[in-house]
Image (cartoon, rainbow, N blue to C red; front, side):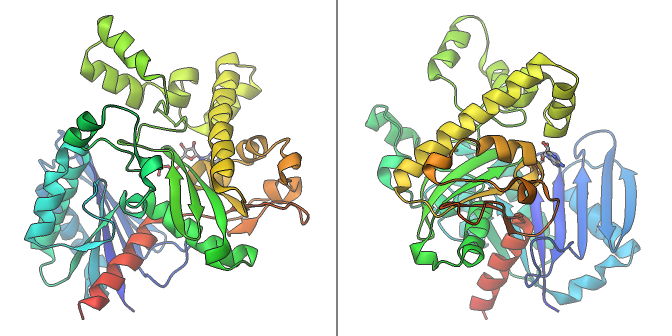
Length: 400
Ligand code: ADP
């Protein structure tokens, strides 16, 4: 068996998985691990494999410490036996700017280019680089491949990517719509044509990646023509703790009225979205509060749906003809209420949900619209690690 080791390095955590690139989105990975609380007094490593869970707590000063300790722990648990099957290491990298439209084999130049994009993702790209560098030391004989969250959206039409601000300012600061969650949008949209029995080049679709972070994309013949996240992953839909779109004047107003930039950053990234409106960011809790008669939670759901439907409607007009609308990620895959409400009263546009199919709990990719719904509505589980593994394996194979 050929496996890919996939790393997703954040500012204080590293997730890793051994993935079989031939598996399906709902298969559990061979090994999955989480190194968390890096840089705090007590760090933790959790590794899961074949139904077993292994946990270790120890101080982890930095990424190097964290990943070295994780490798040692893999050895202790005997799980490093999988290393002999590894053919590549895939790294999730958040911002590829305009530089990267496809996965890149990691070498000195690739790392420099990712570093040069740090102003666009000041928290993420440095963490991604640390992760890559440590992994290269730990696994020197394997090809390392960087897979970019922005990559799929690199060639958005200029009109969709351009913000209507002074073009010289935009050019000087590289301000444009980059889009994120690209690996997921590409993976999910790639599965849809077969599920609805259409040729990929004749499929127009909307993909709704609704997780803690959330984004939408409009895709024509496999190519994205619009997406809801922008220069940063703050834009677009209402999210767990992020605001999504707000009037940019709100930011000026708050800055002029005593809030500083860091407070504003915290407000928009951590104290907004469902959390800001209802106090909780998990949709299961939002529904629980609604059932208890909580008005804030009710409003949070309505605000979420209003913004979601605005974007779906906009993308339908942009696409002209739409063949499929697909829900994915934590909320999209599991929350039948959000799906039903997002698609309600759209018969006029050829969208009809089959309530029984929508409410059925399943981990499989499936159509949830009625037979006579002109636009098919689907639930398709995403799996970013698998998608990264597939891309990394392909790049490694090209290298021979
Ligand atoms: P991310 O990868 O962005 O952290 P996920 O795609 O894993 O997020 O989605 C996590 C979110 O999915 C949770 O915060 C919760 O709102 C939602 N979620 C997960 N399971 C369910 C469920 N059974 N019903 C409703 N929402 C769910």
